[in-house]
Length: 99
Image 1 (cartoon, rainbow, N blue to C red):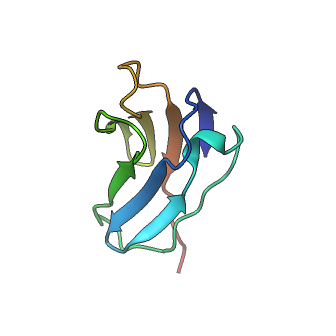
Image 2 (tube, rainbow, N blue to C red; image 1 turned 90 degrees about the vertical axis):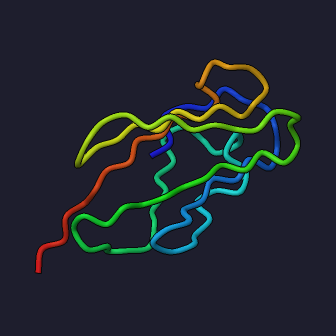
């Protein structure tokens, strides 16, 4: 779930790189707050998920901070324009699958 965005750059890409490659948004600054973004799954318990943010139009590299623990994490994204880590704020929630 995208909680908020405070950036204006176009083309900020957020994607999962492991255990599969999937782009979750290709213009994160312009997604509406409250947008639910779903990744392909399910993944087995204990699967580590790697993600990256690409901001091709900014001089400084983007960065991502992750806090929380199973089943809810908060991702704070910095697009590289400043250092406030509030450019995109997302909540990731693990949804256990019952057999």
